[in-house]
Length: 278
Image (cartoon, rainbow, N blue to C red; front, top):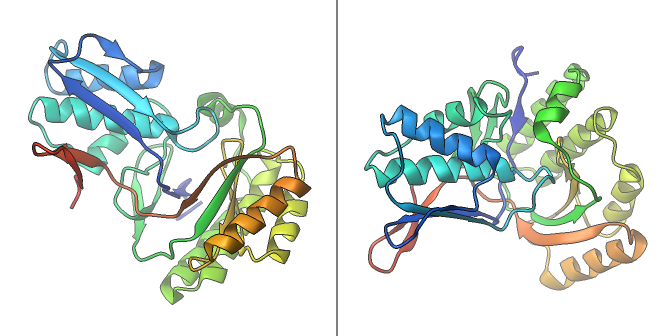
């Protein structure tokens, strides 16, 4: 809890949902149940009965793994539909829309943010965080976000607050190790809510091979191994290979970095993507 509110701190990475709306397209393609709800809610908020153009959604985010795929789908749909009608949305509007559909992730906010994922309130922003290198592994299976939040009872509040305090201390000091330790504390605390087998063993192993720590999808199946920002490509590949050999049940999904969140929009004839919230 942060000042009595449930919270999460986002961990944006370089994987995206793209929504394209055009009169050259026909029909609605790629939208799941939640993004269809976002489409309907956006049309209603704009006073429109239907979308007079075709729409196509594509995503590089894996589903049901806790990597904010639904949040990305919802945000991209809301922004694209609004812009198609010449209305510019803001993060707070997207967040309210998303939170009305499900407990959500604020990866569409610029920077890394702390938000109340249940009601959509913004709580804090953190700029200038180290661009950790991250190896993302999947433990298998899938988690239904809505069902998870219905079943989980809030506990571990004091330790969650302690992890957030350590994260903010690390951010202010620009200390990679403190920030990673906060992520570790949060990951271990989450074991009582959504257990990931062998997490402690994995943590000990990766620290022996240069990693600063781990983070987890709190309502999903993935584990991120956090390497220093300046970790070399060769060291990263070697470390990741050793993890795969030692823990063959883990599936490597991607190698990426921590980055700022946000929404990008294609502009101009070359359709170059630029940040919407600049």
